[in-house]
Length: 222
Image (cartoon, rainbow, N blue to C red):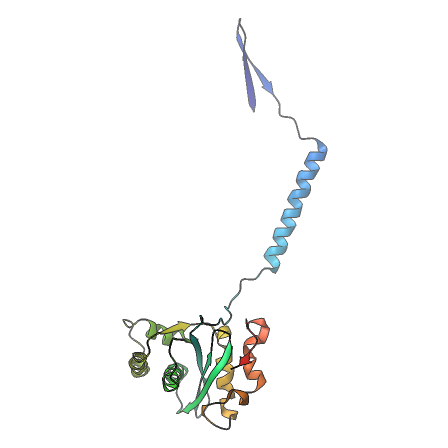
């Protein structure tokens, strides 16, 4: 309650002022604005989703990005590595097969295969991306002791890495590694292994990163 005090020569008295309600039209506009913002907030809360993946992104100019993955089958493991330049163009693709192993071992072998293939092809300034956090963490931090089943593989990768002038390892979610994943899944149906001609890769594999609109660039060839 507000009080206004008006001193007079004779005495000091207080007068209570009762706040008046806003005019009806103003109250209506305030309510209308409130309801509008409330409805907008409710709609946003119901229809806004937080992205659960980050799409594949090209490397900086002058760099290569090689994504790798493995496909574990009952009697064999298929390894895949695929290289793209800063324009998103596929420049190299490699496939290999190895004896059966678990998924962690297979992911580590895929990383080793990617690094060795890049070295054999004379590439440098490379970002290697994979979706196995355990493998990438072991490569990013030498102070981290890798799982015993992949420790020798990680050591081999670190030795090969010394042959590059610029190299880095990056972890991505599966959604940003779709091309390598699809490439590895296609490996059992490929007529040969090793360096794969880009033109022989099926369209559904090449366009894998475009599924659900996550591919930032349309696949193209070098």
